[in-house]
Length: 119
Image (cartoon, rainbow, N blue to C red):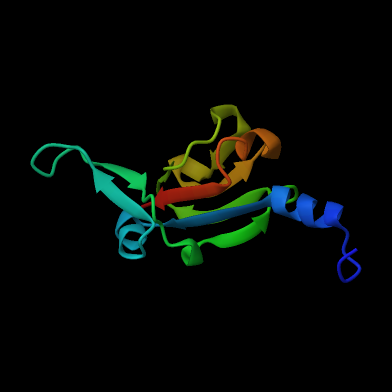
């Protein structure tokens, strides 16, 4: 025991820790989360998470209990990889009001980081 916290509890917290960030493409690039790559003469570039991204820009969450993010956006696109059947983007009339995680174990299996570009 370390200060009344068991090694098991520390490992469980580490396993359940995940991080998310969302914003416009410009915001995320400005805050060193995203980079735009590829394309030709400035057209068709794709947003990708930077390899040396700014970890301080992310919000830390407990993935075992965290189920939704309120986005309040017109559109939302996940930049990071998460299985399609593990989440849904909800909102009236095609809007992206919130991201709902329907299967946390699957959702966080590919990446403990979630990046969403909103418009």
